[in-house]
Each structure stands twice: as C-alpha cells, then as structure tokens.
Image 1 (cartoon, rainbow, N blue to C red):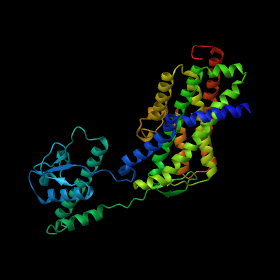
Image 2: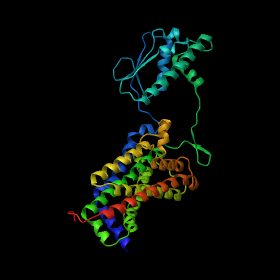
Image 3: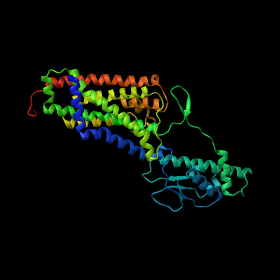
Image 4: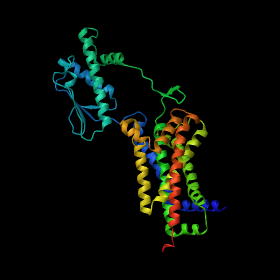
Length: 396
C-alpha cells in the first residue's frame, strides 16, 4: 500500500507538471514531425533541385549533347546560361569537341560551387557530370566509328545513348532471416531514431522531481517514515516506466497515422507485437534507470538540467541518432557501440527493416537491460547516499 501511494503521488505530481508533459510528449512529437517534414525530399528519395549554370564558350554538337544529357540526369534542376554567384557552375573547355575522345578531355571540365553548397549537392552534381561526360564520349565514339548517324536529331541520339547505358537496378533489404525483400520505406529508418531520442528525455523530469522533493523536505519525511530504499526507488521508476511506454505508443502512432498527413510514407510495423513490447520495455528500463542515476547525482535543478540534457545530446550524437553511423569514420562507429541509443536503434531496424523476430531482437534488448542494471545499481547507491546525507534544512 505504501508503494502504491508513493507511485500515485508521483503520478499526480507529473500530471500537474505541464512543463514535464510538454518535454515528454509534445516536444518529441513535434520534433519527429518537423524533422520528417524537413527531410521529406530525402526520405522519399527525392533530393531538392540544384541551381546550375552551364558555360559553353564554343557551341558544338558535342556540347549541346552534353547539356541535354546533363538535363536528363537532373530533370528537376534547370540549366541557366547566364552566370550567377548563387548557382553551381559547370565550365566546358573551349576545345571540348576536339579533346572529348582524348584522355585529358574530361579533366578540363570545371565545377565551381558557391561556398554554402553542401557535400551532398556537390557529390550529386559531380556524379551527374561524370555520367553526362561518359554518355557524350560514347556518342562521339559511335559517330566517329560510323555506328551512329551524325545527322540524327539530338533527342534521338540521346535516347539511343541512354538506352545503351541504362542499367536496371533493384534495391532490396536483407531480412533478419537471411531472405531478401524489396527496399523498406524511408519512415522505417527515420522514425525510430527520433522516438528513441524522445524517450531518453525522461531523465529531465525525473531529475527535477527528485530535486524538488529534497529541497522541500519531502525526502526527509520519507526517511522519518522508515520507507525502504527499494520503495522509494520504485516509486520513482514505475511512473516514468509507464510514461515511457506511453511515449513509445504515441510516437509510433504518429509514424503510422501522422506522417501520411504530411504526404510521407506511413510507418509499417511488421513482426510480432511481443517483439515491440520487449523492445519498448528494455528501452524504457534503460532510459529510466539512467534517469535515476542522474537524479541522484545532480545537486541542484541547474545541474539536473545540464546533466540530463547534455548527456541525452551526447548519447544521440554518438549513437547514430543525429548522424547516421554509416557516414561515421571507423573509430567513431566503434564509439557509437557504447551508446544505448545505438543498441535501441539497431534493434528497431532489425524489427522494422529486417523484419526480425524475438530471437533476432534479443541481443539488443539484453544490452539495454544490462545497461539498465548497471545504471540502476549506480543510481541506488547514489540514492542511498543522498538519503543518508539528508538533514533538516530551511527549505522544510
């Protein structure tokens, strides 16, 4: 009965704390939707258009063919002939037609980027130019050998060259069972990351609640009532475990029903519901036990804010939440394996993309539960020390 009363007290306090509810539900939900909307083009395999300028000092059939091939490679990025500082520019050499079939022909083509151009846009333009140059070289070679009539219209020549250089590529995912399936939709990659990030924000209200109880003298009253350490710790963990599980359901529901309202692919949830329950429980235990350790470690509300918020950002940064692990250097990928967010994300992808089952998910959940046991033990030790140091103060 005492434990139930403590849990109920914590739940009532949390329900009245609008700031904590906003941190736990509104902020992660808005963050998930805004990030999904901001990355809508990338998530749907549609990249934003490039602003391009093409400089052709000497017009020729070859330069006209290159311009047409480049426009076909980047159909959403119109080419402008007049120069502008805000556009990425492609400069063809004056002897483009004469040196096209020589080794140095492609090397003389220059790309000039505005300083603000991101790496993805640079790589995208670089690849399109290389393909267009290769197609132009093939056209010139076929015309030179007589296999392609020089009098054919430009669009017909382009269609023939694109037909010869076209490659059918089918993308598939390797499932946890080893079978192959068609490529998963982008929501299955993006939603889990922000869901995990949002669930670990539970550290902040846990730490603030602990500080308020100590400063108001509530912890001292509990000590005088001879409540056990286990009762006090469980009264902190159980309400927030429930909140984490509710977060899990709400954010998944946003992925399933909220993303289509933004014109994005709905989140598909393959596999057994028990697998999602196991992952949610393991993730909630890891987040709440870490929150208990932070709450017992912090000595003030300011420290609680800095420790919980800062640690959440660090774990997300190194765990593949903010930056995909696939683009990290090898040393950073090894560091990422130390983050519980990385284990949770890998478990999510095993379920959503790999369509795994409970057995495939078990290694990641075991890591999360071991992390929960370690941080929970640390939290209990720190909690016991704080209780033993609690004295009557002027805050009472």
